[in-house]
Length: 307
Image (cartoon, rainbow, N blue to C red; front, side, top):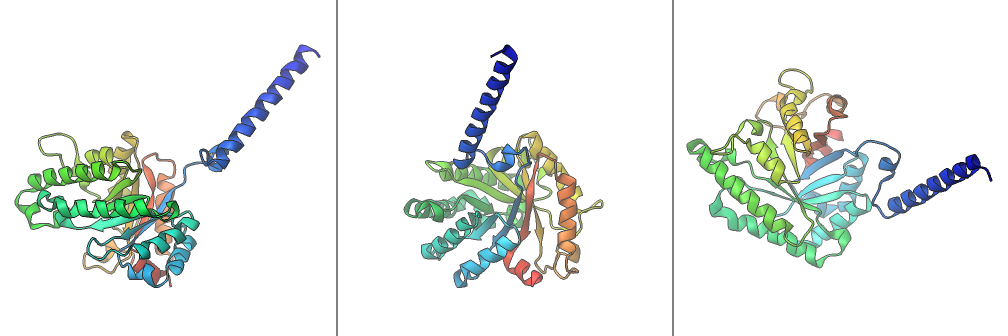
């Protein structure tokens, strides 16, 4: 066999070995077919479920809607006072069948204050204790916080003090949640959070949160993408900032009827308008490393709007 034929044979054998390795990695879930084929990242499409009666009555129906809308992440509310493990077990199991991740959602502005850290700790402990006793396909994949301390009267009195306590409680949640678990921790933030400074520092609160949390969801409540006050304009600073820190952000929009102005929600808009505007957003940030996807607030009102 001449040298040329031997080189060709060696090349073919090498490629065959690579192909076998790739197939094994894909079958083990270490490598996705999208990555193997050179495709881009899978973008997040999320929604919030605050009203747990929506999953109690018919979890299959809820998951069916989510799947139709290409949702792959759900933040579902967990009450520390009325927690029913059976309810979440069946819902997460159905979601798992459709490759939809479920995060435990907790929301309370007072959780920003250190005097209420016990309540926040109870929420995290409840989620972790639940995960310890259920099968893998029924576990929460993460914890999602909706704290919004700027709604507190204390925010107007001493904003820096509230921010300091908010950061302390957030750090505590992350440490507690990740102790001996693989839980992700994420949270909701206003689109102007990048304008807030960490007290006594030039660092922005958004940078601190991006470094501490696994992901953040921006409440970019507008019903149009383009323009000086549109979704793209108000989220670009955070998307760019996330990219600089090797993180990415999820952009949230609203479908709830609100008194904050018709421009802040897709409620009552023409059918298909939200899809059109979100397509524009996707096109604008399609190749941006700081953009992870979108989230619709919330499931109950989204479902009503669609139907």
